[in-house]
Amino acid sequence: MRLFILELKRVLKTRMTIILLLFSLFLAFLMAYIPITFSCHEYTNADGNKVELTGLASIRYEKDLQADLAGAVTPEKVRQAVEDYQACLRKYGVDSSYDLPDGVYEEEITPYAPLLHGVREIFANPNTGIAPSLMEIEPADIDDFYGQCERRNVSLLKQEQKESPAAQAAAQTMYQNVEKPFLFFPGYNSNPMDYQIIIAFLILLFCTVIAAPVFTSDYQTGADDILRCTKYGKTKFAVTKILSALLICSTAFSLCTFIYIMVSNSLFGWDCTKTSMQMIYSAVNLPDMNIGELQRFTAASNILCVLAAVSFTLFLSSKFKNVAVSLSAALLFCILPIIVYMALPTKIGNWIYPVIPAGGVGLQTSILYAVTDFEFWNIGNSAIWLPYVMIGAYIIEIPLFIVLTVYSYIRHNAN
Image (cartoon, rainbow, N blue to C red; front, side, top):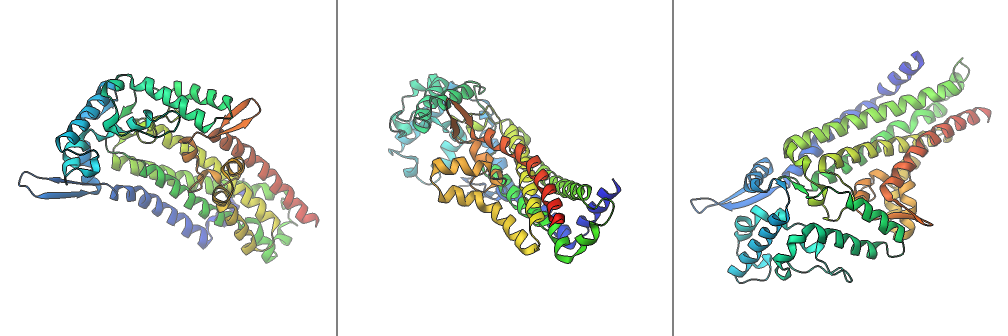
């Protein structure tokens, strides 16, 4: 234990570690606030003057404007919203909301606009996937809103997973377990979830910088030759260095993620966390999660991803004798999932990037986007949802790379 505490102190006292950890805390607060700045509303007051609201004022205005929508999203509410939308466009003689006079959308449609979310999507042509306009949808058809959601889920999976009946069946089972009616509470959007991924990716980079020199710096300075001669300078010393690095990185990541979620939800309002993710993303998303559950699921998955990436970085650190080479290789693997995702065909990329240690917090390959997608690993007559593949891979990789790191360190001594 004393050796472990000494190693913790050694890493935490380095200037670079202190700077990165403090900067991570600053970014957690900053990233939680930035999505607030994207909110803006404009309306005409009683005096006929235009008023522009941004930030928290805009969110409060939106919450007041849509207060009646809070709660269950019933087919009756959705039908009324579609009827009001169609009546508004007919009143102004236009076919699209984009052709409405200035200010009309904000004043007449915004109060119920969230209920229109997903309506066009679920009435899309089952063969072509082309969605009709809201003016083409019969309000009476919306009485079976959730039945239509399930039918659209079936037709979409036939397009997305047409070669895998197992994936179609698995996805349909997942969607049948989604709680209906959906819940909606105004004021939230997808931006805070996107920024949760951005802060996770940045902290991953910081943790990589902290972990890369753990073994390599001692190799480079020659200190390792002395440390190996001590009583605990081999296996126990390697395990101690590994555990201290994992503890520092996991604690830093958990603390920053906790701060981000707490600040973000406090700004947007904690009631928003009860909103079904289907009301923010796609109406046919597979998981039975609200926003709060999605935040926690993403955070927990990201911690596993970061631990897997740090474990792999420690393995690289045990292999290289130069800090610059170790750090460069580790950072390259942090962005490798993005490169794989962009450069390779989808079918090939979906088999590779989910198992790369840093894949779950990639800006385009994050587990959040996998949760909102419909991708599966199809193995014979079985289908595994991609987020489960990613989580399973990280759980395996953490102990695997820890063992490989210890072995590599011992072999380095033999050499």
